[in-house]
Length: 242
Ligand code: DC
Image (cartoon, rainbow, N blue to C red; front, side, top):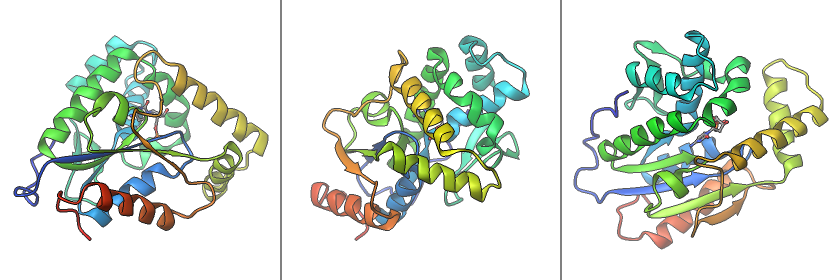
């Protein structure tokens, strides 16, 4: 695993981290990526790292509950982001897996993989190394403001009603050519929320001091504008793009 070459563009600006956590279906990834662009920061998608670990488990036929074996396989593999791309792409060796990690088989196993303490410790250490090299970052996930970067300069927690999250998920599935009942989707989301909230390591929580933002009845642009306004107000001396 490699943190990537330090970015040169932000040498003279202060180091800073904005974290964005929250459950699935709140539009977190899109919002985090857009916010990073608007403020002139880099973007780290930590869910992609857990998804890539799940793909490693599938490819190498590692039992997804065997955290020790999986953590050591992930440590050995050349997993890295290409930071010149926007958003950064995730590679295993020279194989770009950015799309592959969104497939159903990966999605089905990733919650189990993300529940393994040994693997979480490996990925958390990698995330911190990335933040050393990429000093001005919007980092998005489930435990970024609580566990990985509790000293973050600004912490957000995005949330939305279950029905709205299910509706967004249904739209994604229809776009991908799949038909699944709304009931089934709501049950899946609830089950995933429970797994995320109840695991011993890095559970999904509202980090202390996090600003909670409901994304339910607003589009991405409106949410990004609200977050950017808060960032400008709270971090006036950090050289954020206007
Ligand atoms: O955000 P996502 O759907 O790409 O996340 C994939 C999985 O990884 C999901 O089960 C939650 C988990 N995850 C996690 O446990 N910790 C993170 N920091 C990010 C994601």
